Amino acid sequence: MQRVGIRGLKSHLSEYLSKVRAGERIVVTDRGVEVAEIVPISRERRVMQRLVAENKVRWSGSKPAGIQGIHSKGKAIAETVVEDRR
Image (cartoon, rainbow, N blue to C red):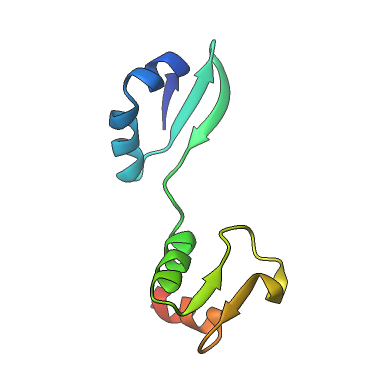
């Protein structure tokens, strides 16, 4: 895990985002104090994005509120996620 100050992050944002894309986590500091962490998009979020792009589910992008948060157009989402993990 790499640490970077706000100024360094602003100056080299593209470089740090490339590192995050490659799977690295970046801790952002403000005067030496950790204030944030930049992490890659989770596998689960990528699966949801793909399902939305394939028009298999509707999702607002926020944390699902139980069954009301996600509306499936086919088989159960849990079943789809398990299949994808295989």
